[in-house]
Length: 231
Image 1 (cartoon, rainbow, N blue to C red):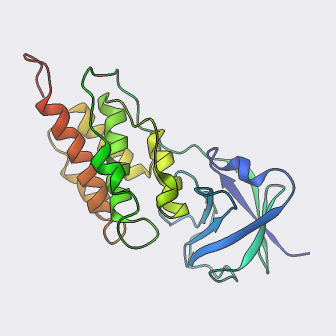
Image 2 (image 1 turned 45 degrees about the horizontal axis):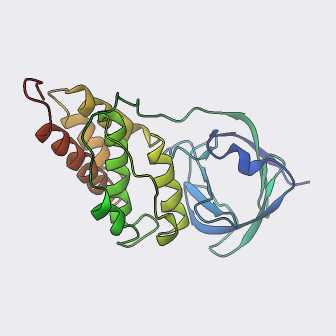
C-alpha cells in the first residue's frame, strides 16, 4: 500500500473529496502546488505545500516544497474518499482549515457597471489571465465597500483554475495578503503600502492586476460618496 500524507482541506472544495473516487486531470504541477481539474468547468482542486501561496480552495500539506508529485500535465489521478491518489503516494484529508474571507459591508445605493470587466474575462496569458485577476480584485473590494456584485459571471470563457478563483472571490474568499489589503482599504487606513507590497509580490502579474481591480472599485466608491461623508 502506498504511503499517505495527512492534509487539511478548505471547506470550499471539501465536497470534491467525498464520495466514490473519480478521475481528475493534472492541469499543472509545480514544486509547491498541484492543480487537479474535475470534469465540471471551474471545479479545480489545488494541492499545495505549507510554503505555497494559500489559495482559498486548497488542500494544504503540513510540509514545505519542493515536492515531486510524480505526475505531469495531462495525467489522470483519482480523487475521492477523502484521498488524492497519486502514483507513488496518497494525500489523505484528515482535517479542515478556514480560508480568509472579506467581510461584507452594508449595501450602498450606487450601482457599478460590471460590463467592461465581465467582457474581458479570459483575456491574458497563463492559468489566471490578467483580466480575471483584475475582476477578482474588484469583486473583493465591492464586497468590502458595499457595492452590488454581478448577477452572473462568464466563467466558461476562462481557464478552470481562474474560473474557480473568480467564483471564490465573488463570495469574498482570497489569499490572505489580498484579504488583508482589501480590509485595510475598506477601513480607510492611511498607510496601506505594506499590504500593497504583499499583494504586488503575488505571481508575475497577478498581484498588480488584483490591485488594479481593488483600486477601480475604491475610486468609484470615493467619487460617488454622498455629500458630507468623508472618504
